[in-house]
Every structure is written in C-alpha cells, then in structure tokens.
Length: 332
Ligand code: ACO
Image (cartoon, rainbow, N blue to C red; front, top):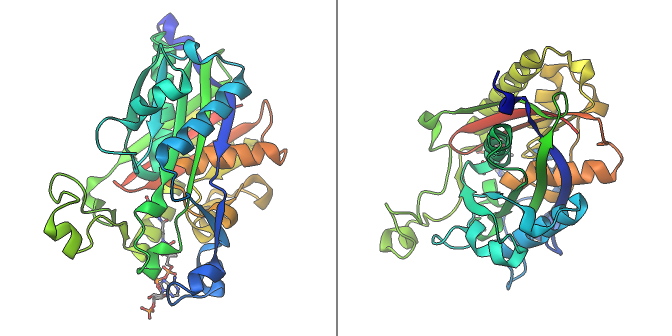
C-alpha cells in the first residue's frame, strides 16, 4: 500500500444544532387524522424539531459547523474542505456549502454539497477519508443538515409525522492506523428511486410550474411499507459487510448508531445483527427522521450521555432515498 494510504481520517470534533421549536405528536393530532399512540407505536417518535419562520438550512449548518470546529480546537482558516450532506439546500444555486463558507470563516476551503438523502453523512465520511488518505486535505469539516419540514406535505399523515430538522457536524484530521474511520461500504440502487422521492422542484417539474403546484410535486413522497422492508434488509446486510471486513465480532462494537428513521427498523436491524439493547443508540424519540443530520446528531447525543467516548468502536449505518445505503466502522 502507498504511504499516503496508511493515513486514516480521525474524528477530532463533534457539534450539532437543533431548532428551538418542538412539534409534539399531540400537536400533529390537531393537524391530520392521527394519534400520539399510532405515531409512538409505529415509529417510536414523540416529538421533532421545526425551524423557525426566519430560519433555513444555512442557519443550522453554521451553528453545527461552528460547534464542531470549537470542539476540535481547529481554526476556520485551517479547514481545507467542507462537505455538506443535505437533500434540502438553501437554494438551488449556489451550493449551500459555498453560502456558509464566509459565515464559518473557511477562507481556504473548497466547499460542495453532497446529495445522498439519509445516507449523505456516511457517504461524505467516505469521500472525506479519501482526501485525508491521499494527503490532499489535512482538515475536513463534514456537516449533515436538513430542513425537511419545509418539504413535508402537512396534509399527508403517512409522511408528515416522521420528519424533523437539525444539523450535526464532525471535523476530521489524519489519524494513525487503527483509529478513525476504519471501514466504509456504500451502495446505490436507482431501481428504487421512486419509493422515497420529491418528484417536483427540479428541472423536470420546476417549482414554479403549473404541474408542480397542481399535483403537489415538491413534497416528500414515500411508500412507507415498502421502504421499511428494504431498509431492514439493506441496513442489516451492509452492517454485516463492514463487520466482516474488519474481522471483528458484534460483541466488539461499543455502540451502533443507525440512521434514526423508525424505532421498529432500528430494533429489527439490531436483533438481526445480534446486538444487545445497550449497544444500540436511539434519539429518534426526540428528533424524528432528520435524514443526513441523523447520525451526527445522534453521535453528539451519545457522547453527551457518556455512551460514545474516546476509543469507542462505533458502527454507523444509514439508509435513504436513491436508494442509497452505507455503513462505517469508526474508532473514536
Ligand atoms: N396516523 C394514523 N394512521 C396512519 C398514519 C398516521 N400518521 N399514517 C398512516 N396511517 C394508516 C395508513 O393509512 C394505513 O391505514 P389502512 O390500513 O386503513 O390503509 C395504516 O395506518 C397502516 O399503514 P402502513 O403504511 O402499512 O403502516 P406501517 O406500519 O408500515 O408504518 C411507516 C408506516 C411508519 C411510515 C413505516 O412504514 C416506516 O417507518 N417506513 C420506513 C420509513 C423510512 O425508514 N424512511 C427512511 C428513509 S426516509 C428518507 O430517505 C428521506
């Protein structure tokens, strides 16, 4: 192996931001025909966060990004690269990563957005580690952030109860073999592109087109039941691939942080992998499905609860629109 590839990417800082406004299941009862009991038993979700009227994606990214830089003790000018994983950009042009660059003071960083729905953060980790491994970058900020509630159809009870807003970020620097991001596997299957989608708002049906407005196209659509089955299968498979690639046993994993989409999916995957309840982290109860923000948000919560520590072996697995799915094994 070339010398450069002996470098791993180590997480040296974490940060997150959640909007203040809490939307409870009880409040949703007044908006659509649903019940707190249905939402809790089918999804595990009790509440989610919603951006304020004057907030948008940039506000979330800047707060989480700053928190991660401070946590890492890294100066903004030392960041070489910003990768922003999101499906809910500030505006189509330019990339949201470019808009936040001056706000974060990342004067020396190349900045771009990465679109892989709920797998976006894990995809970004895989991209970031290549640049650190080759020596192309020394310090990388990866942010996963979403304003999903801006794209939720508040008349569709099968989706509007699921999603929330938030942002999480990590700072990566070169580490020595055995620490940092040890293994990543990622996959895409566009044959399932239509099971989770927002069919309007792009070049086929621009947001201002009559069709977009008449057919309510720029909203998140999901075939929940189908998604559920593929999610359990693909998350289990890709997690096993990473565990096997690392040559470890499930008992070696200190913490499993899966994408926080639905408690039942998380439990089914945990059971299939043979993980104990103590090994599996969830915060879906409090934040709902925050797509690309989900895993870094959960990492911050896990650290605050004392469940993610320096040296912990962390397995993360994500699944989302695309379809995309990905898993990573990280020595913190
Ligand atoms: N309140 C009350 N009833 C509801 C609600 C609601 N909020 N939503 C749906 N129902 C009803 C349905 O209409 C249906 O009624 P019917 O039997 O009379 O037709 C019944 O509940 C059952 O519906 P299902 O869709 O079969 O319910 P299911 O148990 O599958 O739960 C859910 C639905 C929670 C959406 C589940 O399928 C799920 O979590 N799917 C996966 C979602 C996911 O993981 N997404 C990840 C990717 S998201 C991304 O990438 C952005």
